[in-house]
Image (tube, rainbow, N blue to C red; front, side):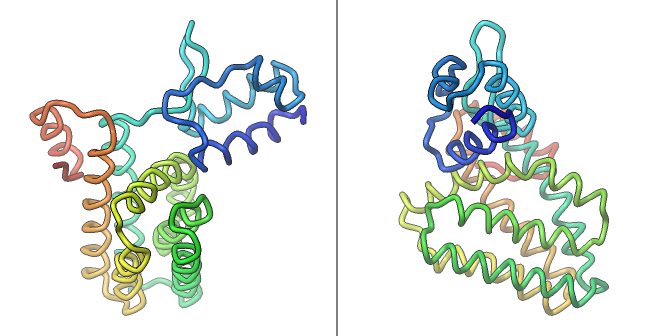
Length: 232
């Protein structure tokens, strides 16, 4: 395996499967030996993953698995909130085909949640469901922005799913939380859909904030007030 694309795909899947801990070093020499690749290919693959938001690269420290901090979570969910509210608001005028895509994405989400709640396939299906809601806005540019945060969002959702399993939050509850969004969208009820989206984002961003490195409460409150992401 000696192309940056192949290496990036393999490493991306391992990081999103949580086979590495946050901040764990990704050493070029070790990866080159393991994948029988050149160090240049490894370096290019790591640069690609850094641009996707799941690898950090620092001078004199090399590459590491990204550790999300409070600012990362707040900003990531601010962008997601803006995108998904646009999609939810458009459900009344969305095409029937787009609504069917939301239903199909929900069905995949439910299936993967029940099969293995703590899995990459579940996180991918979860992210795809929210992307299908964003797609209701029928805006190629919004879809493009959604794609740009797709990998980082999948990583954040993987952390949440692992926490759900450890906290004994059932797959049935996870499915019900998403069903509220689906039902409002399918009913072409934009106000209800926006409320369902906002409540889901508030709850999950707050949970993710509790998982990342703690910061003084007053600092978190200031950041949250600017972004609309509610923190606890």
